[in-house]
Every structure is written in C-alpha cells, then in structure tokens.
Length: 114
Length: 114
Image 1 (cartoon, rainbow over the protein chains, first blue to last red):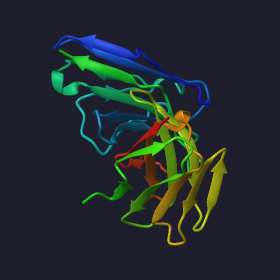
Image 2: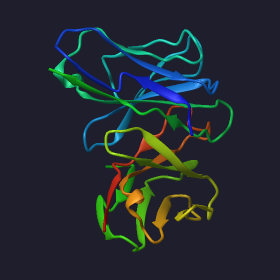
Image 3: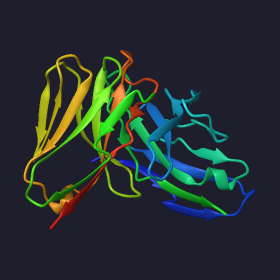
C-alpha cells in the first residue's frame, strides 16, 4: 500500500480565499504529480516535479501553483479560489529511474468553492 | 479525438459473473497501467503492462496487453461486490518512463448486482 497522504480530504471555501492543498509521501520518491479530476471526467495532469526545486506545468492549464522545497512534500496553492476551481485534486508520486514508473496516488482532496 | 479510449463506459454485472473492460490506444504504448478508484477517492494501483503479449494476474483480476501494444483488456472472474468501482487505464507513451505523467481514459464504472 502506498504511503502518500493528502490533506484536507474535503474543503468548502468561499470565492477569493487562498488555499493550499497538502501532499506528502514517505516513500522517498523523487517524482511527484498533481492531477485534477472533474466529476465523471478523466484525470488531467496539472503539475509535476522531478525533485527538489523542480516544478513543471502539465497538460491541463491551471491557475494553481506548486512548490517542491522538500522531497516528501508537494503542496498546491490557489491564490484566489473561484467556483471554476471546484474539482477533485489527486497527488501521486513515483520512483525516478525505474522505467516505466508506477505512480502511486493519494486519497484526493475534494474542493468546493462557493 | 480521444487518444485513449475505454469501453464500456459503464457496466452492470450480476455477482459471480465474469466481465471484461477494454482500453485502446491510438498509438503504441510504452507502458499501460490499470487503476481502480472508489467513488470520490484516490486511485489504487492494480497492474502495469509493458511487453507485447504480456499478461498479469492479481487475485481474480487478469490484465493483458496485445502484441502491438495498443490495446489492453482487464478481465474479472467471478465478480464480487468488492470489485465495484471505477476502473481507469493510464497510458505512458514516452520511452522516458512516464516522466511527464500518465494520460488516463475516462474510466469504466462497474456495478455489481447481488
């Protein structure tokens, strides 16, 4: 079982608030990812990281930002939440250099912006 | 057009029956991943296939990758209520081993009727 955690699991927040979704993994994985999943829709990659101080944008454009100061931690921030940001956000990690790399997912954060 | 297609979109099966879910790629796969997702939760890794013709099994779930590495099937034998959920296939087309994340299908919603 993967040791990857996300907090909070559920978040209801008003428009304009700043929010940070936390993701931590204890597997020592270098690679980490954020996916966005709208209800009934497929997952889309919004950010990924190869390791500390590395952040890249994914296939789906997102107003969120990420940081990678520590290997185990990959938080996602929305400076000003809007209803269009309502979605489920899934964090994943994988071990770099093991091709192909299996990604292990956290439980997700369900965000509702009112 | 969709690069990764799953079929069927939804499936209702009587408990104890066998079922098959398909995943078709528009181009040759480097790796194909199968995940299961409970509604509103994260993804649980099931299996990864890389070699043409490869077949893997875990308990009552068997996944195969065709010789051309463009189609995979997931077969569940003697289905149980615990098999209910959303099954997602994820494609890695990059020989770099998923460096830029996976592309997912829309998922197959599986319901097991008692």
